Image (cartoon, rainbow, N blue to C red; front, side):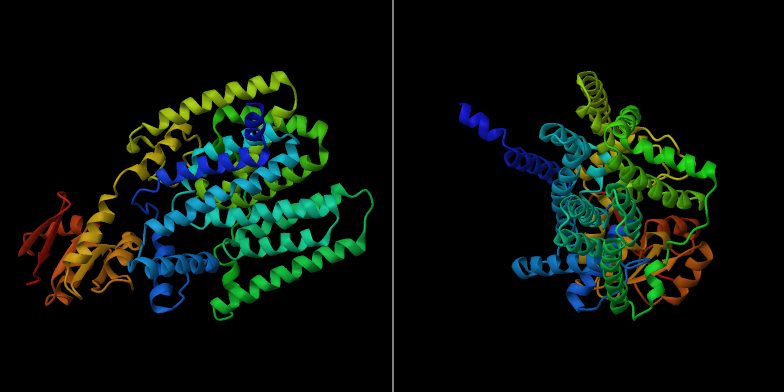
Length: 494
């Protein structure tokens, strides 16, 4: 029995067991949905690359490595099953990387806390967080990039502490991979400089020059690789990342939003963790503080522009905030009790939140928090997890419609719904493709009805709502029902 207990207590066994639990929890919530428009955008570009061999940018900077990786997995899936998986495999990839993220996060946590069991508990808290959980089961690039940037951080710390150049090269390699998935993580270089300066008692210009040269090579590799994918239009690397300088008030308000990502109760533990980290480990205090300040400043520029996607852009900060909160475990028994009580209260909110109806989520829409929604309920965030246990009615309806329509039938859709219908009704992987027509207004709809009067027309969601205003003139000639809830109406334009 002692041998069994001793085996179970081994660090690698505990870490692997936690990995399995995390993976199983993610797999359970994969569902059948791509509930974010960006996910459809990514998969659409990946499926086009896999089927036609053509690379097209996803929006903004393109996220080339994420698109290529998705395409490769989808292509392999088609080889074995002869089916183009546009939902399950892309979500599965994220679930796997969302679970593998455990290892670099644990490695960083262990360096800071210096204790196996405290580090494991803190890591478990991080992976129970509903924001980390939710973005670990949908085909977005955020978790994929986060995996690489945390390994870049861990290897850079190894380089500083062990003074071996191989760790710097590994850090730069993962830094390169992170930037090829999400360019915003280039900001970590500022914190790397801070960590190097506070870790060295004497200034070593030669060593610093070597480090900067290493980073320069990685950045040049990023620029060159982006150039290959974007016809050497190097400005695309920075597109979408320019913003006005925020005011101090905007910085504070956006910081409040980020702090709320770990739950109101854990904010108190984070504050205590910062105090004790300052007292006991200045090196990591300044490093983590610099990370927080740099990203808080950057994210506050999005707040100034009136649009703030807390769920995605601050995901690295959510992990860092929870690691600092977990530092309380390494202080004393009183702090451990406080942390345990906070964790218990947070888990109650989390469990309660899973059972909340989705329409109770207080933000504008299901996935975004806008600037006016400063204090979003933690339990309401958790409720979004249940989204993945439900069948996505729109997705199923569109998949059935793809089998129902004839080649080159016309589908009218509201212009804000571009992601989902394009992939499911006119994707490169489909044997019969619909002709998609965007509708932006009632007048636009009338004009398009005349233009496509010789075609069979299907009205989708918002376009159908607009059609109801003029249906007395344009009456349906055929009606079908999909999934016992979606009515397909074909209408003549005469």
